Length: 232
Image (cartoon, one colour):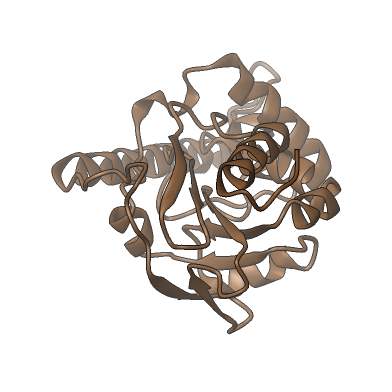
């Protein structure tokens, strides 16, 4: 159900049919909400500094395919670091569907994609077969903390979140999964230049607040023009 995709299982809709499974669903919803609030409180207590334009990133990340991805990119490409929610999140599925359909454009624009999920690597690996991008599983949210990516009660503050969830649910054929890190995570985008310098950054204010492919391509083109590596 739609409510299950957001972490709140629905009760039976037929009057008088409150069953044992409904009691279990209610208990699960409270458990998930509690876990989400717990992660939110822990994040509030352990706030880390957000990445700023001009900061430098020099680090190697290990993907779920056991492939080391160094930043800065050793081939002179831009790196787009995407911090998503969990691998079964229908909202993320909707967003990444656009990226999957335009992967060739992103490649031709000189952009390397590196996508993070706060899920186990083996869970992300199951999801990756449908995505032509490198992915990192970070169930303990180590990198989320390192790069200032937070959870918030504002995750569902926009109608676009629910529309994206419905679209993602249809694409996933209701094969939905929840995460131990709760449903309150926010997305983030960081664009890193070939020298390791952050050239653009966005921290989402709700769960569907991130760069579109068009915005990413425009940012990349602007940066390449600035560097003189792209002809007008």
